[in-house]
Amino acid sequence: MTSEIARTPDPTMRSKLMRLQEAMLADKDSQVELHTEHHFAHRIYAREMKVPAGVVVVGKIHKHKTLNILLSGDMSVLTETGLKRIKPGEVVEAFPGIKRAGYAHTDSRWLTIHGTDNTDLVAIEAECVAQSYEEYDEFAQLEAVQEVRPCLGES
Image (cartoon, rainbow, N blue to C red; front, side):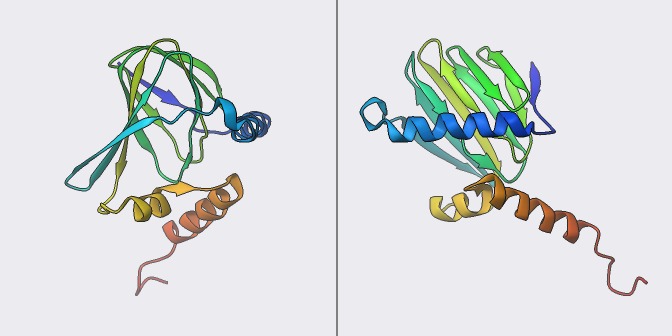
């Protein structure tokens, strides 16, 4: 089963997700260290995150479309388009510029798949993640300009 997470961001939900992230970062006592595993294949990087039951996570803003799979468990995911309950085995297409928050109803394993040639985690982060919505918006505008450039020799 495949579902989508947002094509068009909602600015009010963007600010709510950012406030949630800021509140979570400010509360150092309730932060949980999540176990992550990194998987690589030809031009693919997959990040597997293990989320204990009862934990809320806030995701990063991805610059490119990603595929996500709930490998096991049961999670609710809040995005700029609303709340969605995800079941094991569900493949979720997440569009660029979307921030998510997830709640694990049970111990869960979430896999995010990126297209990249990089294998260095710092380089992957720089290539695939925007640190803010402003950074993402600038990136998206640059990408749009590059897509409409004429080929050399065309008028």
